[in-house]
Image 1 (spheres, rainbow, N blue to C red):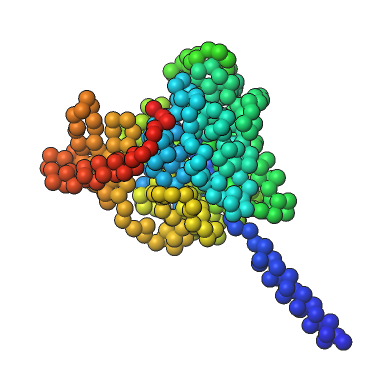
Image 2 (image 1 turned 90 degrees about the vertical axis):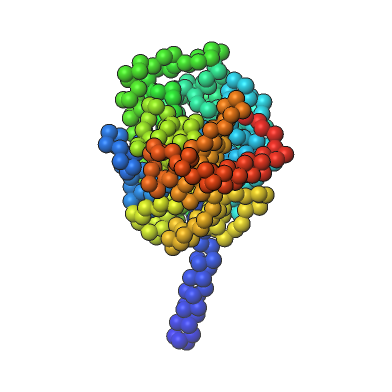
Amino acid sequence: MDRKVILVCLIALLLSSCKKEEIKLPPNIVLIMADDLGYGDLSCYGNKDIQTPNIDFLASEGIRFTDFHSNGSVCSPTRAALMTGKYQQRTGVSGVITAKSHREVGMSVDEITLADELKKHGYKTGMFGKWHLGYATEFNPIHQGFDEFTGFVSGNVDFQAHIDQEGYLDWWQGDSIANEKGYTTDLITAYGADFIRRHTPQKSGTPFFLYLPHEAPHYPYQNRESPSLRTVGNAGSLPVDKDSIPGLYKEMLEILDEGIGEIIQSLKETGQYENTLIVFCSDNGANRNGSNGSLRGFKAGAYEGGSRVPAIISYPGIIHKGRISHAPVLSMDFLPTFLDFIGKEPTGKKIDGISLKEHLIHQEDIGERDLFFAFKDRSFVRSGNYKLIRFLKEGAERFELYDLAEDLGEEKNLASEQPDFVKTLKAKLMAWEKEVNQGVESVSQ
């Protein structure tokens, strides 16, 4: 009898163990994106004045990228590429969806977004922060794969009053305007931490995708104590003393970092940190108020300072700690990467991004591929370490060629020394521009 009891207990334990293994959830995914954060703005990227210990912690826990590029050098294009896994030109969002001229257009709801993809596979999806892919309610995030959305849909809002640059109140709960008090960065953090606490495996039984696109350190430059700079019905902002901007910029970034620390702590307190893939990046390079380190150029430009930005990926126990990756990657690579981590393939058409999973886990080479960029009258192709920039002004072309392995600051133009190579890269660039724009109607500036 005793033997039978022992045998039954062992079988029960075995079945219980199998059952637990069967219900183990895929990883949660937390994607945090700063706005106009430059390559040299973080302490883990060499900044001596701004302290970002929580972002530095993520870098020490995972991989810090040295050759990561936002798909665009301005806001909307990068966000379109990130959401769809393809070059933004394919979505019609090749430029900025402006508050002044584009209030009735946006990224098509027919696009299959990252949130759509993960939702299909059982993920709860939440977004808190900046959308910038359409002002009209039909383009709202809750109609593009997100179960929950609180935040703003314009390029930037007053950090206190949540009014956009054209004087419209721009703080939403779902697809309805519902303003509330609070400093924008703190509100985004609070909503993110609350989402984490409400979606623990014990409560929801499902993994989650949390997207936190912050406003900081984009203008208007305001800290927690700053007064409102905008009023409803009036376009523009009250001026900020230029001498105060460096201090405000530093404080805005350190508040952002503080909030990221709260997100990490929420994951740890709810027992989810070990099963969460965390990504931090920027949507484009810094303007002249920030730092792009030793890189040439700024936001909106075709030089490295416009699109080479900080990026960090952490996944405790899966991605080895403290690594540095020099692989050239883009924002559009996140969608196929996240899906690969849960064993799925993208269902959208013409996906341009690639999965980084094996590179992240096993340090495998991501392979050769040409990378492309286009915004207004400037474009470039990156082939290996070489970068050809094409400037177009009044129908006249001008080319600059750089070897980024030897000249990251883009100081020595090699175009006149290698005319045949320029022709080869130009042909690639022109073929790409024709292909990604074919049959697409632009909805941006």
